[in-house]
Image (cartoon, rainbow, N blue to C red; front, side, top):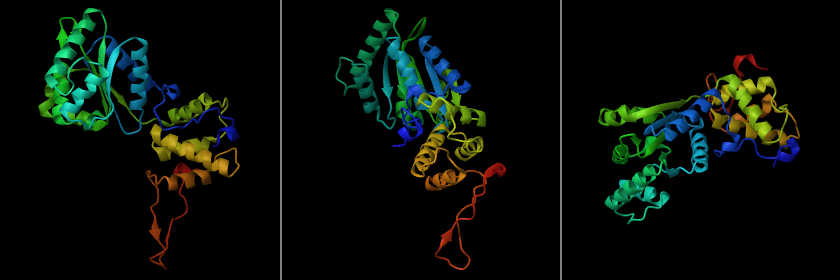
Amino acid sequence: MYKAFFGLKQNPFNLSPDPAFLYRSFQHEEALANLIYGVHSRKGFIVLTGEVGTGKTTLLECLRDFLVSQRIEFAYVFNSRLTVEQFFDMIAYDLNLNCRRESKTEVLFALNELLISRANAGLTTALLVDEAQNLDWNVLEEIRLLGNLETRVGKLLQIVLAGQPELDRKLDAPDFRQLKQRVALRCTLNPFQEADTVEYIRSRLEKAGLAEQTIFPPEILAEIHYRAQGVPRVINAICDNCLLTAFAAESKTVTMEFLEEVTQDLRLEWPGRRPYRVRPESSETPFRSEPQFSRGLK
């Protein structure tokens, strides 16, 4: 809606995990390099963790693009709330196994045959699991057992588990110490520092067609970082709504008033935000105290 108004060719702040808009911060670059290295070198188990909205799925999309370009066959489990039967059914479907998919035994025989055949041909096969913190204990145990498929020179199946910090806590459980010991590489994504938030917003606008970022003044960028707590998905939501609000007001610049309106509409919470309270003279009419901008911003 606002693209023409700001001279943009694309929407810069979509919430979808588009690899074309990946901001290659140091930690994202390092994590992606570890994922690619782990799969390419047949390390076996690789774990990627991070808080909600820090970019795990986007990195998996980048990894999928790499696997396709390298002719590496892979199965991708994007819905981790599965039974054991459903899990093996998804693997059989993605890898196009020639077997009865409702039979776990037949899937395992067909999978083992495929993995050995590809390994003998010098080819790699991978399994990617997103939202792995939701995996049922029984499914996680099946994944551990798949990691046992190996030859003398390496693992037959490269397994990437991506999830929220709860995944690390699950792997720390005594029952899964065998799986934890098999993890060859670990990557962690953290929220941005302020400098990364500023560069993140600038780079997304540039990729969307805006050569010079003049929409968000420095003080607004600092406040967006603070209110989003450096989480990329929240930054996207704030910026997208700010552009929409500025467009509606026919303003080429985002103001603090626009930001305040957007963050209230999104019901965001951040340290130091003053909560809603009730007027003393009336218990029925709520009001919000005047905005208290962090770090003395005006």
